[in-house]
Each structure stands twice: as structure tokens, then as C-alpha cells.
Image (cartoon, rainbow, N blue to C red; front, side, top):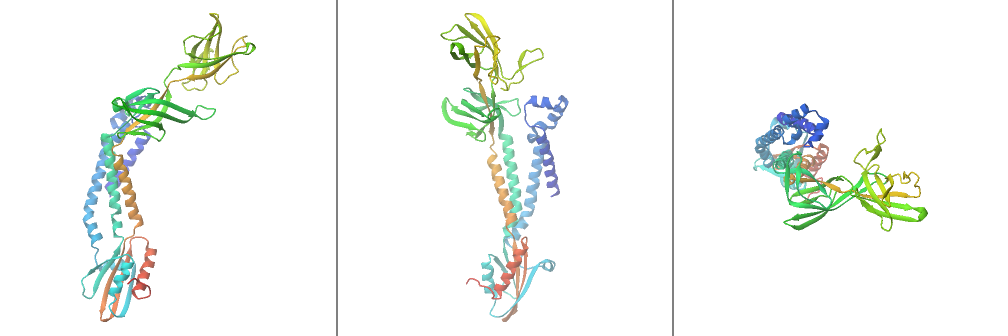
Length: 450
């Protein structure tokens, strides 16, 4: 027991380390938070992949061996007590029994009635011979003693499942562009790649945001599984709704933008002339407005517009906090207008005297990717089985109460005495009432089945 507690303490301390230090993260994350020397120390100690380190697995192995040895040492004596409880009490134990009573009978032998009483109360009877004094034990709930052993077994099963996962499972990530196809992914260590064994195609990606912000409310991906050139499965992937194929679970974990904006949709209005245009232009390519002598070109797109100390435009981040496009319009082949157009500030045009023209940023097409987590947990079934067995074992230990009543019948024909000693491993108040009820029934003050 002391060794088991020591090993449990080591596991807890190790798990704390594994919680404080991100496990299997991108190397750049470690560079941001730790120095080069610290990272090397962590790598040497196995702190960056702690749950697969040799010393952590050694602790689990020693704990498993300890549980096995302790259980096998005690099982023979436990089986003897459960299957063949002793019918006689030694003197020292008799003094420690909390419930006792002496009943006196005259006339016929009270033993047949005693058998019916204990049977009605759910007890099993084990007696020793027919001689006087007749000794017997009535018992029930004896299987509650196996509860701790079921818990021990459940821990071993959970550890087995974890070991199977460590040896044969994997976890990794991949960014799948919209309309793109992937057939491999990067493992959690950030270095190695692994084949899926099939291909994944993202047919569509959709993200919704809370009103007035760029904070994501929900996002989902339409995925197709392709194997041997054939579409074998389609799934709408959402958070906590994975795609499962051939034992591999694919979760929706993140999303983002692939980079530059592909195209921008603008509106151009000239109220005095009652002219209104809407066009979609590729960034960097001139686009002519049909039926006019205007030519428009999107010079650049900034997702988070800001000005530096020299009043030059730049993007503060890759987030779409303040989208803006720099637009150049030519009229008759000559430069006519160059300005910034904002999504948020629709009244700003910066047209320098050309107030009759209104430009608006309606939409921008940003190629997105869906971030997928790829996992395979072959030991997951063992882990769930272990937890289910643990719950059952705890239920057996906590909800079942082992109760025993030792009986000794003495006397002769027509004059009998029955001595009883009762013991319950828990719920003594309820057992006190049951013991009193049994005594009353034995003396004929309660009904029993015939």
C-alpha cells in the first residue's frame, strides 16, 4: 500500500508538469515561452512529451505490477472468506461483535423456522453438522468484498488502453484549404508527417460570427472521403461532431485565412448622373466598367488598416478588424482617382474634390482553410471499459453491505436456546433494525413465508 501511494503521488506530480508545460506543441511555441537552454533541459527530461517518456511509462508499469502482486496475494484468502465463511467465532472476535441476542424456545425444534426466516431476509445459510450445539452462519452481501479488486482491475485496464494508445495511436493536425485535398497530416510533435490511407476533400467551409464583431460563433466544413479514386463518405464536420472513418477520428479544431485576398467587390455611384455600378475585381488586375470609360484597379488590400508615424498605411494584424482597399480609377486612360475604401467607414471616400463619386467596399473573397485534428485511439475501448468497471466496482463497494449473523443452537428436546451474533460492514443503523426484526420473527412475533 505504501508503494502504491508513493507511485500515485509521483503520477500526480508528473501530470502537473505535463499540464503546465504544453505537450507536443509547435516548436515555435516553446521558443516564445522558454529559452534555448530550458528547452534542451526539457527535451532531455522528456517534459515536452512527458506522457510517452520512458520514466513516466516506468511509473505506470511499476504501479501495474504492484497492483497485480497485491491482488494475487490476497485473492485466495478473499475467495475462502466469500465462498466459505466460518461458522464458528473465536473468543476474541465474539467479544467485538456489536449485535447479539439470546432466544429461548420450548416445544418443537426452532431450526426449521430459523431457516425460513433467514431465507426470507435474503441470507444464505451455512451450517456445521447436525450435532448439538449446532453452529451456523447466515450471510449476504459478501461479494461487496470484491469491489476494491474490481477497481484495481479497472485501473489496470485503463493503463492497458493508455499503453495501446501510446504504442499504436497517433494525433496530429492538418490545414485543409477550401476546395483542396490532403492525404497526410503533421504529427503532434510538429516534425513528422503521416499518411492517412485515404484522401480528404473540403467541398465547402462556412463560418458565422457574432453580430458586430469578428468573433466566431460557429464554423463547419463539408468533407468528402476519397479512397481509390472513389467518394466513399460525406460528412458535415462541426465542433464536437467528428468524422470517423477506419478508426480515425477527424475533428473540427480551427479555421483561418490562407493569405492574400483573391477578389474584391466594390460599388461605384455617381448620384448627380444617376450612375451606379457594382463590380468584382481581382487584386492587382485592371478591370474596365462596361459601358463607361472608367477603368478600376485594386492596388492592395489590408485586413487591419492603420497608419504609422510617417502616415504610411500598413496592416496591424492578419485579423479582419478594419478591412480596407486602395483603389485607383482611370478615366479615359488617364489617372483620375486614387483613394482608400473602408468596410467600416462607409462615408469616408477621400476623393479630394470629386465628392459626386461614392465608393463602397461590399465584399472580399478570402480563401479559407479548415483546421482538422486527426486522431486514432485504438485503446479507447479499453479505457472506457476500465472506467465502466471502476464505476461498477465502486458501486459494489459503497452500495452493498456485507452482513453476517452467527447462530448457535443449544439445548435438548422441548427446551432450546438460540444465541445470535450479528455484524455489518456498513449501515449499522439499518442492520440493527433488521437484526431486531429477525429475532422477533424467530420467536413468532412476525410473519414468515411457509
